[in-house]
Amino acid sequence: MSSVFETAPSAAAIPITFVTKATWDAIKKELPAPARRYAEDNGFAAKPGKCLALPAADGRIAQVLFGLEDDGHKSRDPFHPGALPGLLPAGVYRFANAAHDTRLATLAFALGCYRFGRYRKNEAPDIRLVPPDGIDAADIGRMAGAAALARDLINTPSNDMGPTELADAARELATRFGASFNCITGDELARDFPLIHAVGVASTRAPRLIDLCWGDPAHPKVTLVGKGVCFDTGGLDLKPSSAMLIMKKDMGGAANVLALAQMVMDAKLKLRLRVLIPAVENAVGGNAFRPLDVFKSRKGLTVEIGNTDAEGRLVLADALALADEEKPDLLIDLGTLTGAARVALGPDLPPFYTNDETLADRVAAHAKEENDPLWRMPLWPAYDAWLDSKTADITNAPSGTFAGSITCALFLQRFVEHAKSWLHVDIYGWTPSARPGRPEGGECQAARAIYKLLSQRYA
Ligand code: BES
Ligand code: MN
Ligand code: ZN
Image 1 (cartoon, rainbow, N blue to C red):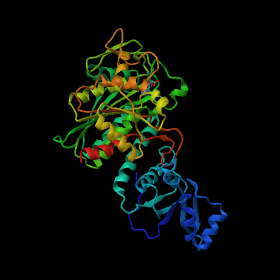
Image 2: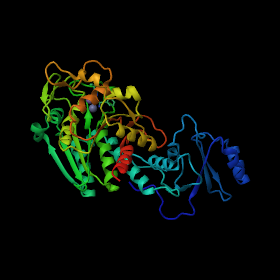
Image 3: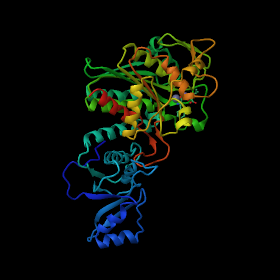
Image 4: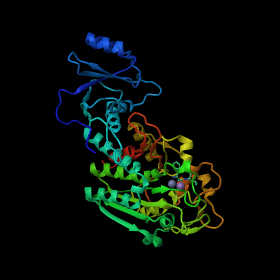
């Protein structure tokens, strides 16, 4: 992705003036008379999201007005300026005054330029922005670039984004940043990663465990684990078609840990990074794993299959167990794990889980600061007994549907023992309908907040 930022000094950049109900009168008074009349005749009101280009005497665009919510408005969206790239004609622009949060406005603008162009011609106009003074354009560009990577990977349909292609994307990233890359494939997984093998075995596209390492081994170890289910049919517990319709996005955790890894490596953070991605397709077949099958996991715990559609926690369990063996300073996993998380908090507010209080506070603070919303939910100890199985050590799907995101988190917790801190995020990875800075489709979630957390923790 080429950057949206105009780096050459550009005196001709078209100014964008942010206006609110409260500021519009004063701004209007300062406009040249013909421009003021033009705005009035066009019925421009300083309402959030309203956009008007004002002509100069020679008919060219002199400036752009863009409406924002008043300061302190209840439902103020700091990403509102992210609507601009979808409204403006091609050109070079600059912000003429401060948005509520100019850094987030700049980020939103960059995020709003994203288009998924793999399968048809990109007709989006070429829009560029002169970075506002005092804004770290390199960092914003890094975050927007990572978001584009996550979105591209998620938006790519499963026929072009199977376990192999996901591994290719990780290998490309490793090569670009001089990281090591390793991949355990197919039946090689059967002995040491039985759960990953079980979930992935029915697909004609072999399962994989992707393993990337980067950075100075003397630095503290941070391991990222991402759910890479390249398509989730539900397995023999087949999903209804309506639920299957967006299951190409079930590798959203993997896409987001790759996006996060890209930011970490590009910013050269002082940490030793490991990225583990169990990449599988949860398919239907004669050799598919079944309800009530029992597998001995990598960690040694036996797992009874209560539901083949609770596959994400299975593949993560073996990868988390491997990660945990090294006693990392911080272990983080992201995955599109439960519908229950959506019932609780909706598509835009993923729940996160950790028993580290300090870490929880930091995650919440960075999530807010980056407008990458996350909400803490509890690893509620009393529900841990719901994982009991009559046959094995645990079941992957407790009967009943109560607290589904929590019981998934509790399941994963069983596989983490030695890591100094553990953070789990149950993401959605998808924007169901477009909002400013967030085009419909695959979405980068949690990666920006965590990137900022890591930047501070390992400065
Ligand atoms: N990939 C799904 C979770 C999901 C569903 C995410 C819908 C976003 C939207 C996951 O593998 C799954 O199917 N989870 C089951 C778990 C259940 C069988 C215990 C679910 O949430 O229904
Ligand atoms: Mn599933
Ligand atoms: Zn799934």
